[in-house]
Length: 353
Ligand SMILES: O=C(O)CCC(=O)C(=O)O
Image 1 (cartoon, rainbow, N blue to C red):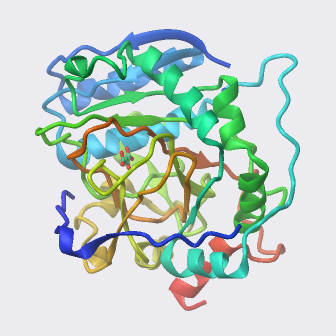
Image 2 (image 1 turned 90 degrees about the vertical axis):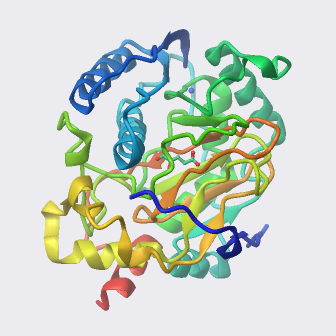
């Protein structure tokens, strides 16, 4: 599944600009040598921690490599979002304003599998989110000597800056436009956060993958599933909480790869495929896709089709990179009586339907 990308086919994306309640108890996972099976146990423990309303930091075992490592992280992301905690008394979601997206942006999303929204949330909110994440990690922007690991993962956060960042009027308008009004669940925070530090070491979690959507009750994340209707997931979202340049470990996105995945899932109906099945050929059908780097200012959000093939990469820059990579959850199953959303249009187009 690992597929290093040459820098000559990777370009920063051109902008298509158009105009969470946390109890900060941190659990740091020590560097033990777990087997893949033992790690499944860790996932279950993390799930329990999540239900206990903690913030948790994931440090995966050193010998969990390649697709397993990427898959584990993808699984944790989905799991954390499934555990969206109810809002505490008195906290209200911001009201929806239908600012939407331009037609050009929607067409870009359908064709490429993503759209870049600049200034989707404010730089001030990004700063407040980073401040909390530094505290959760027990690290400081002023003590770079303590940045020992290439990546630290923080779980789901529900304090107010995270809720606000996920629910700005601009984003809610975009959710309406891409998923359909009334067809998405308002995010109750943000997570998970793969925080990447400048490091000569490979992070070990940079394999190409698709984030899975359902069947997550299975204890083996490689058995988690996605289907052609994208049951259980409306979008993959990349929230840039710090400025991300080409050297700062921007997420790599295989432009147009959602179409190949839709075609792969089509023959498998509602059951879809597991991550094990989908990744068996290393996502070979998307190897020829142009690679786009998810760069941008803090406050930028990439709204991605749920089938987009993407990967992390090593941090070659100077300042830590903070992103959140939550799904947007749908309110229900695909309903053929409703007008098709751009997500569904993209799937139909890819499948020639
Ligand atoms: O850190 C990144 O750039 C992406 C991470 C990712 O795709 C994942 O953990 O599923």
